[in-house]
Amino acid sequence: MSNTHEIKVQRREDGGKGASRRLRRDGQVPAIVYGGELDPVNIQLSHNEVLLAAEHEWFYSSILNLNLNGDVQPVLLRDIQRHPYKQQIMHLDFQRVTADEKLRTQVPLNFINEEISPAGKLADVLVSHEIREVTVECLPADLPGSIDVDLSKLELGDTIYLSEIKLPKGVEIPGLALGKDYDDAVVTARPARVEVVEEEGDAEGEEQSPEVPATKVDDDKTDE
Image 1: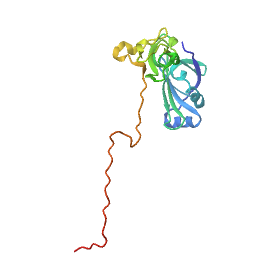
Image 2: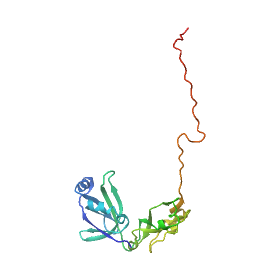
Image 3: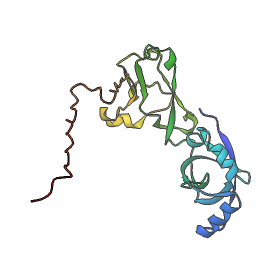
């Protein structure tokens, strides 16, 4: 089970773009919380606190406790809107979770023991992390903050697939139920490609442009 993190929020009464712009000028982020048996609620929270939280993986994949004037609701972050070029978060969507209902969300993969693996010890081997997060299904209490992918036995030519990942208890990858076509490669170990750069003019068989002799002009010659 992942650790929970509490975030203090306030209810906001005004809606619309104009009200949202005023909130942002005051250092607040407009947001909404929805889901469960309760009505959607417009909320606001400190932009500085959100900006700090957004630097951590838990903000995107863990259960968050929204504290609305003492009323704590477990939620997941479902959407985050950022300014296209400013370091500013524009809007957040949170979804309520229920203890006895399974949820689906993306969880980051944590690759471990690559440096001690047979492939990791070879200088001419390229170990590629093909995907870095996976969609899982579980009860809120079983949601992990991340999933470890053990690479200690990875050798040259190996591929590790989703179905080979050891999952925490109570956690499933729903995509695997759709068939082998959805059993994606997670890690590959291939020979590193060596590029040979030929120096200009040294390429074998390179054609040289023939020299054209200059034409001598006789200044004394006149037209007849």
